[in-house]
Image (cartoon, rainbow, N blue to C red; front, side, top):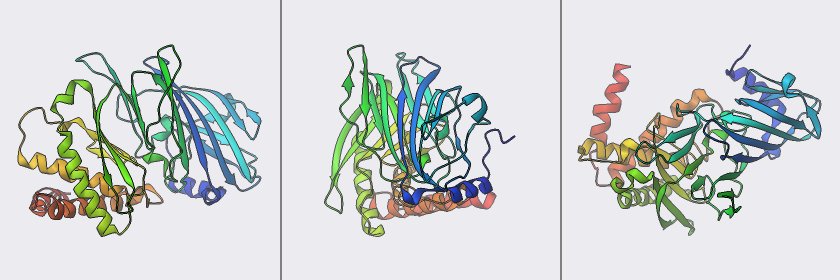
Length: 361
């Protein structure tokens, strides 16, 4: 019984059946108005495959109400087990619909739900690395099966909703809820898709890419911390990083916008969701901090920005190459910090921290 585990061999076997080069697209509708425990998730996936072959799709859900493959209804009671949905009798071109109830978490995996003790407001954010987008929608959960992702989100109308694509104007329903229909993403891996929703405060700016495109910028945090966030400084370091990386990589920024969101109870330092980077609230300084902490925040900002090229635009086939993904971003961000910002001694800090950490390991 595999449980929630997926082996590399199974992923290779599935990649031999499913052909992302022929185009693969997800349409994901999420209903965030179903209370504090569950949310609705409806996935429509279109993909090419070897005719007659069998495979499976990943999903961690409390209940699965509907599974339809190429117009044929499949019984969830028999097809959904061990966080997988069995798919048999595939055609050259397939349409799969999965309707489910998924669970919020408070562990920083999947879709994390946080209630602010200051004012009782609810904040959500996604965290999908390594294999946790399957906690939010049905998905081929492996980085080499890239696709486009189109999100439609229904939530309280007073919330802000952020994903990989620019946030559209919401359609209000007159009952206190609204629906945001995002444009499809470029072709990306599932683990760098993102959803952040709640009554976040935000401020916006922009920059001009090396391609001549105007890139919208956003910085977000929850209301009760907003007064402490130095968003202008975050924008300044972001601009310096953009100019540096676009020159050194000789490739313009590959996504439509760049939002940076400081989210509560984050279980790591930051995450490189394409165009919607999440950061730990440790980087919202509520009192005086050391220069070392200020420098570390700059390195982290530039680390996640470097991932937009190395990690998001170009992605490893399997998780065992995360070491290269992260090592490259750490090298690139330290170089950018030393050469493009006021923190010119960044390599000294790197030697004292990361390099000695590696020696200890």
